Image (cartoon, rainbow, N blue to C red; front, top):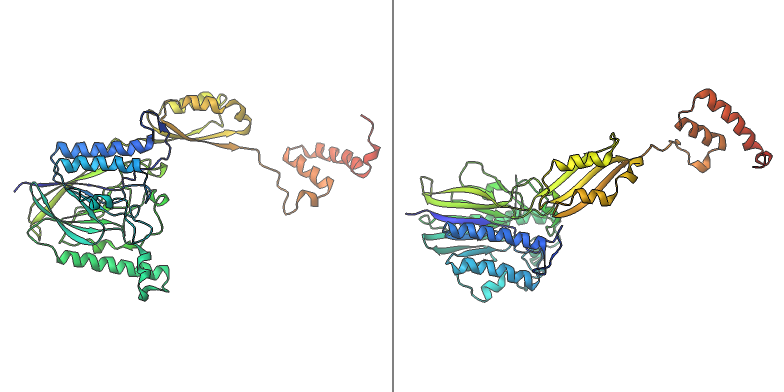
Length: 418
């Protein structure tokens, strides 16, 4: 039997506009186009290698109610796979969920129109999917929503911690129930959009909606599964090492912000074949990196430089800024500020796609410490004494100045006319 080839990706988040500007040719934000280009890159890879099944592990859009232009862009790419005869399973993530149970999710239109080769997985169920190289079982676990427990009397009045524990228990029991429904003769994949213990977070908490209940990794570590395809955490990672089954977060296809600056972005290519495991199947997988837009942070300290702009230019010259989203952290003295103009700094960063920020950390002379007293609570002599101390005035000279000042403090009208 030939190997069955799967493509696993997640967290597309079409609609992310961070650090982008309008593209005049399309009328769409350039960062949105970045995410769509990565999607195209993924589709090209799969079709060139005759992919048998595509599993999308949730979060198609940034928002629950995407605008029609973004929906059209996403649908065109799903249709490209479907028209090639490749089944696509769309799992519901937290960003796909409607605010109310009765409303449709952002991808339900595919199910409503009964689009061939597209399966919308909005509930916990085992889907038997026929591919060109044989059937595959995909057990779907959409994003678990804590608030929906409140519709049941037994959960009302519980604390958030108690609700999270109840939700964790329910999800674990449901996954165990799905495993019992599997046909041992057919390869089985668990697709889930959730937070798993031991996962390392990226910066996606800034775009997630609400706090998550965490499911224990042990709930997924079951030999019934040949591969566990996860979504929701944007940092690509394998949670099970070389053990069976592979438990893998594909991660997102594009960087959202500087919290993901150093993270590779991409998707997973999985090959299922007959093996010597308990179920008789093995999954060989690899992470395929895409050409995500680079994020670059430049840190420059020019405080000791006699020519701060030249020193900054040298720091920038050593970095590749082409097509990058760039931020600059600049340390300088207060007296150097006028010599480092914003216009000149931006000129040095002209190769960047987008300048996310120029952060100036200005070193200023320390203020005179007045102890526990406010200035208005101190005498004139005390204030002058503090001033002379701050100026490192020689003690003998300070004493002379204080003596002369005393006459002014006691009789200011006696000052000579200037």
